[in-house]
Amino acid sequence: MEIKYFDKEFVERTKYIVQTQCKDEFTYDVTLLLNCLLGLVSLPTERTKPNSTLFKNECVNKLKSMGVIINSMDDDKTFRTVKNALSHMNIAPQNKDGVVDSIIIRDRQNRNSPVHTELHFTVPQLREFALFVADKHLERLLNKNL
Image 1 (cartoon, helix red, strand yellow):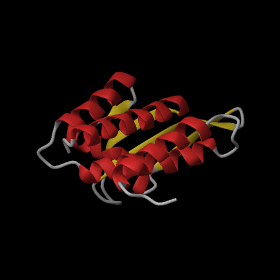
Image 2 (cartoon, rainbow, N blue to C red; image 1 turned 30 degrees about the vertical axis):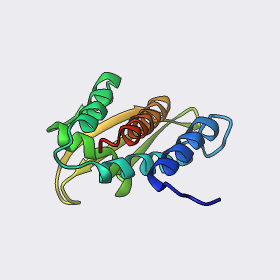
Image 3 (cartoon, helix red, strand yellow; image 1 turned 60 degrees about the vertical axis):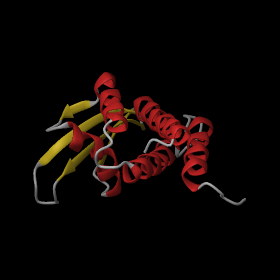
C-alpha cells in the first residue's frame, strides 16, 4: 500500500493500530502501545516549530489533567519527555498480578544527569495520551498549523 501524505497517513494508521490492536486480549499490547506512542509523539514533536506553543501547551495540559506528572521542571521539558524517554528507553514497566500495570518514563539531560521530568502512566492512560496526540496532530494537519 502506498503512502502519499506521510504525516497524515502515518498518524491515521498508527491511531488505528492503537484503537484496534492495543487491547488486553493481545499478549503484547503494552509493547505495541509503546511502539505506537513513540511514533505518535516523535512525528509531531519533530514537526512542531519552536515558536508554536498551542500544540505543546495542549499536550502538557493533557498530561497535567491526567495527573501523570510526578516531577517536572518546566512545560517545554515535559512536552519533550515522552519522546525523549521512549527514544532513549528510559521506561520502567510496573507489574501487578503478572501483567504490566503501569509505565514510568523519565527524562534527563544526559545519562549522567539527574532526572528532570518523571511521568507515571497506567496502561489505559498511556493509550488515552497516544490517541490524544494523534487527534491533535491530525487536527493541526487539517488546519495546516504546525
